[in-house]
Image 1: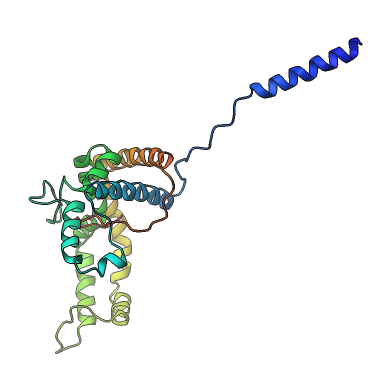
Image 2 (image 1 turned 120 degrees about the vertical axis):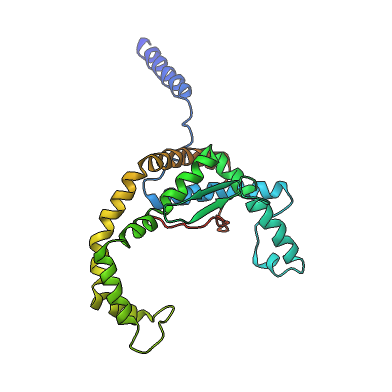
Length: 246
């Protein structure tokens, strides 16, 4: 009898213990490991924020059906203004190349950037700087005598004697002249050093870019947790100029 009672007590304890175990928490999305997946995560979050912002204004991102609608022109104008803002562009940055990039602080795209990055102005300056590092390195490289000599040989190769210089040579001609003039080799030797110089000069903006992008990744994870998955591929392009990922 004592044995049976002990067995019953043991079974009861196991049952109570199993009931006391809390249910497993649902798996939370994590920041992806690959850069491409991280880019996709941020784009997805921005798309969701922009879509919600447009919906509050009675607008939607265009589809093939709405593009064919009779009032597509009016809708497109309203959509562009809602997406990118109107009036004078409040954000402006002139690069070392002399090129000026501008953007609005109103519009759904700007609002989405503030949610993700916190400070749109800081993100604008950092993103434009980082996106144009290669262009700035190219401007420095263009002053190098070795590059200038190779470029002169390339121009002579691409323009036969007595012929007008074409605006854009055929790809086969461009490839051949890259090889014969040595321009491709010179560029391959000079560009890494010039790019390193530019990155050193813009170290503060590179640091800001990394910090704000990390913030955006965490915010994107939070947004993905709070909303059902979306499979739409429509994503508005950023209406700024001079982008050149490095």
